[in-house]
Length: 187
Figure (cartoon, helix red, strand yellow):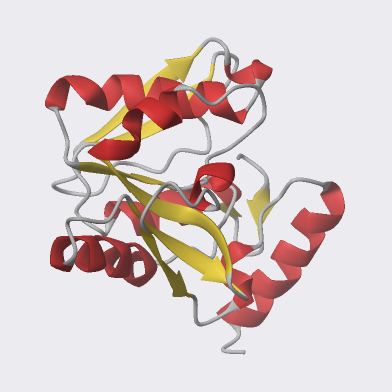
């Protein structure tokens, strides 16, 4: 998360800053136990951001997801939005589309972003899916649930595939840096 994009913006802070602009409350940031948090930007004014340390994050994505869900469960939310901090091109408008769609269609189990028809984060999951999210294991993320026909959902195609670039490898980060430079230069 602390890798620097052109312009000295940390990878993780780019997505987090956009998420803070959505009015999500609380905004739970799940981090590994060894994270020094240097990548975290100052909280935006009015933000209800909380950092949750996940001691088992090294065991896979499902553990981080479960940790974040456990942190928000005492508030009894109707739904949660799941996003990845290594996707710096996520925008507040993408997340707002998810929440607005769910508000108009509260019977849905999920509302997901999509790239070429493939459901991906960021995604909104209603309370009806919390048990299934808690049951994920290992490095299996919520994408498998989005493809499960037992759940009713809506998939919203994103304006750009760039939105879903994530930094899983050094090559991915190189492409993200290149795209970030292009975006900063108005391309």
